Image 1: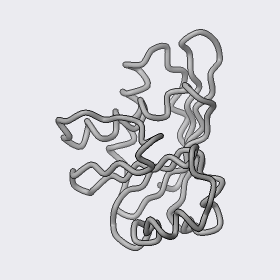
Image 2: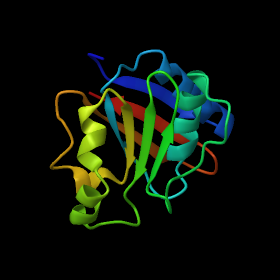
Image 3: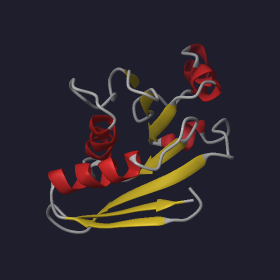
Image 4: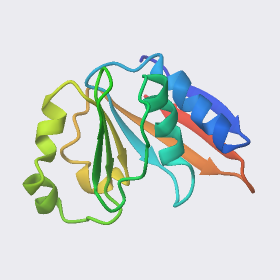
Length: 142
């Protein structure tokens, strides 16, 4: 990707998933997406759209308690949630660097704790901002 993408305003969970499906058309192995947005903004819903667009038939859920979910599609999707684990040493113990060394596409919620180890060359920010009831402003920054 060479330019920012303003997905626009999502008015529903389904539209948020549709924006994720749009992203699935342009992502490449090794891409890392840092997701910004408050609790309940729709980060996992957006990722659900990506994973479903790539052919995954199972349940897509938040890794808030499991920390990492992997989805075996081509290329593999890795969904990481740092909200409950703020200790970088624990992330190293879990083998976080291994994910950055393969050709998976990685989505990281609450990425601040991993900021110093996220590869910069294929790293993108996705901001999902609540702008009222069920409306979300969704943008990707290169």
